Image (tube, rainbow, N blue to C red; front, top):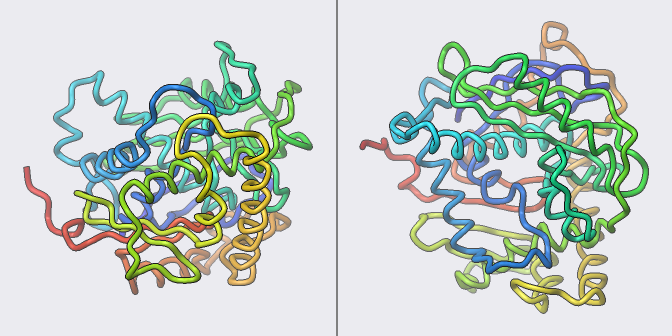
Length: 353
């Protein structure tokens, strides 16, 4: 298992110290890649949920490799031309934002803001953050995230731009957000993949309300659609979880059975009638609330009341339970959103060009 060095500035509360390392196994990395920025309903086009999910998993496998307990660029990444590196770096930035927001802020659901604006009938070409997140405690999509990815180091102007974009959208639903996140994924002076996060000052802009139920349907629908397209593994299905084998990827994807059941009658792609969204969304809100509740009781999710502590004042590793779980089974990662990814043996062989 590898560590992701991070620094988080100007947050009033975090699910851990202000700097340190986050445990990031390959299975956690792949799970984040597969689920971040899922496209909500009514976005048009011809989505291909299974192919897109497989592409996401393959992309992180091809781009990063674990060496000496950290993540570094894989040879395939190094050989990309500059324009290709730009695209891959952006995707890795989104993936890292998902990991850090889940572990540090208790926000596992991140969705593209452009998709939200389309749902609201309010597309815009103005500067805006990349993602909005579902806050476990407010039960609202009220956290905005601007994710940047760099193929090298970083400069102050990069994070300044991310801060400017993150603060442009303080709330999508309900009360204004208490948290905006400027997230930068970069390769530091030692070549390690590292994270920098900052909570910039907020603006006073406001976007019309959209119900969390709608966005939860949008978040989970591509995952459920991919599972049905790949085929449900009846031998591994249980009352608690539905599992599918992902073709060509040597991996399995699992979701809580109530989430799959809530979306079983929803069209896999295209338009969804508002009445269907309301019914399925209400079921998802209930199940997600139970997921968060179980995580809180298991001490995997902490209410953001405690002040941020500095790493030097925090001798105990707050991620020790996660590290122990990953050490016992590095092949599997389960998120606060209930998404489970299990990787097969081919993921852990030495990769050669």
